[in-house]
Image (cartoon, rainbow, N blue to C red; front, side, top):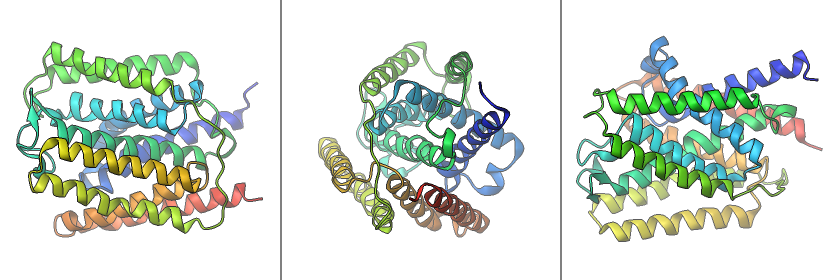
Length: 317
């Protein structure tokens, strides 16, 4: 029997995950200013556009027992929802959010280098890291489902329907989407979901000593991201860019695995280092446009660091 306390703990965990998926990727990256993000209409939109599908991914991952690799591939599929169905940026030859990708590697109506870059970024920043942090903060209910099966199914169907309708009808982000492109996007996401379902979790726990090392490794994501941007900046051949991307990704996975950081609490320290470098990266774009966003971002970052320290003390022997 589920107690009232367990229900309240799960509701709090859901609210925490949805809030993090709306705030961390958008504001810490400098993509959306704090005054805009915290407008009621904008926050509701981001909570639905980000929080709803990511909550569904989290429930699906828990029920199937997916590992972090599986959640990452599901996050890639989410990247296609966000940047393919909603924002439609992967179909732009110019006017890409990072203009270094304008006219770079564009073929068959798709900006492939940008699509790979932004989908991997979303898989980490919007899906894998927020889910890991929310589950770590949630305590005893962190490893349990937070929704009933039918509730999760209804929310999944709602997310699919809303994203599809938006893609076919919205013109604020470009031309209306074509049904054939919609079908190809969902087919690609289905392949990613199938691959994700094969990557099950294995028990992992990281010792609590030396936790600043994984934080520093997450912080080192900044030079790696800059290195990839330089390939686009100097118009390197797309195959070279893709090979460099694959090499950097392989190094990341190998190093984290070698250090034993896929377990908690070390993996959350990697996530916190990643978000710290995002704040540093966004400083350059936000310091003149919206200094208040930098201030709010620093406060948000300090808050999740504090929550993480609480969680670490709770599980410490």
